Amino acid sequence: MICPYVKQDKNISANCVFPVVFFVGMIGLSSSANAQFIGINVDYGIDYSAAPGSVDGYSVGISHPAPFIPNLGYSSVSFKDKDTVTDSSSSNKLSLETTTTIKTINLFYNVPFPVVTITVGFGYGADNLNTGVETKTTIVENNTDKGTSDSKDSVSEAFFHIGLPFWNTVEFHLGYHLMSFTSIDITSNKKFVSFDGDYTIDKKNYSGGMTTIGVQIAF
Image (cartoon, rainbow, N blue to C red):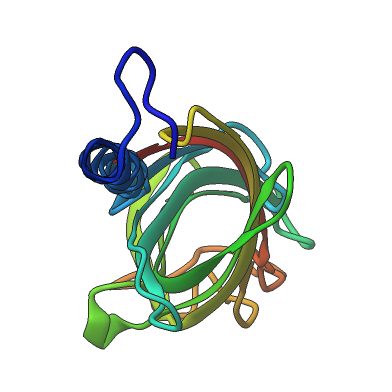
């Protein structure tokens, strides 16, 4: 070890080695301190493939650095659907406006790649978890409010995010959440409703995918 500007002997060289080793060690500690300890994911839903119009959706999650232990997240998407059905034997008309809300709790893993990051996960929703898929249909026949019909069911979810990190603290990503559940008869659980006409109402298949954009902030 050569120390500049000092006369070299064994004692001085030994005295120089310790500060250099200490300095290198502090750099290593600083690098470790700057590594991600915990991350907060916030995503905004921009589309749902089974929705006829705009959606109100989001996904949030908490990431941690512990290996093999999954991270925890939550997803939600809500949208409206309108139908008008005419009685086949008369001029009676039935209007149905359905609000569908899908909520899941999910587990996910972050998979590092050289340039991008990949997140893969799965989720589930059920009534006993205060999640799942819920529809509420407002029923109007011949301009008369007939009441509502409510339906609840379980839902499963699979999703992935692909992200581009910046400065080891911020990541911008694009995601896709696939929601799967059985088709729903939106008038099967109608309350105190008797129709004047005879209508054919098909079951609704609201399974689909929510596209999201979002950001992760690491601490």
